[in-house]
Amino acid sequence: MTNEKEEVAVEEKPKKKSIRKEKTDWQDKYLRLAAEFDNFKKRTERDRLDVYNIAKADTIENFLAVVDSIDIAMKATPEDEGLQAIKNQISTTFEKLGITEVINENFNPLEHNAIQHETDEGKGEGEIVEVFQKGYKIGDRIIRHSMVKTVN
Image (cartoon, rainbow, N blue to C red; front, top):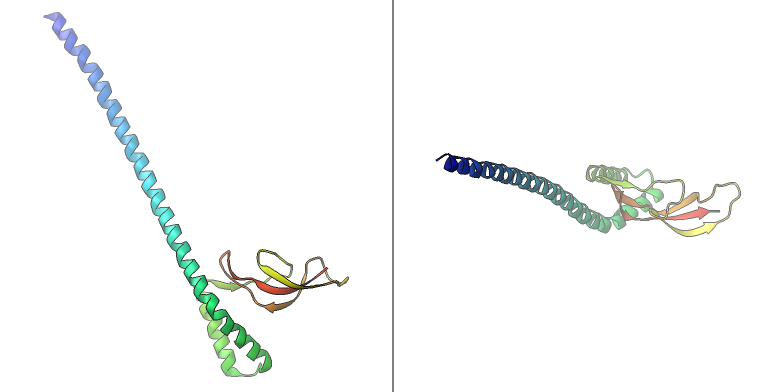
């Protein structure tokens, strides 16, 4: 009879260990799944924002010709209050959308398109001396490169 009790006791110990191991395995799987789901949510949100910014950039790019026309008209008639009001409205709208002008004093090939180059000993290397067409960006994404004239 003693032999039977020992056999039962010996059999129960491995079951407890296997149950504990199984519990630990399930907990590990659960934690990994929770982490994967959290990463999926973050990636999906990042992708959604990227698609939104791409669509916004594509839409704004079509309106930049109008903005350029208003800038040209303002140079011709700077005292025109109507044009100034429209320009202010565009600037406010761009600000709300997170769109900024590309403004640099030195040439950056990621933001500028150099269409003219000249030599001037009084200026620094790669300095921008004239902007023919303004560039715009949303965050780090370029909507349109600036067309510029550089020196040296």
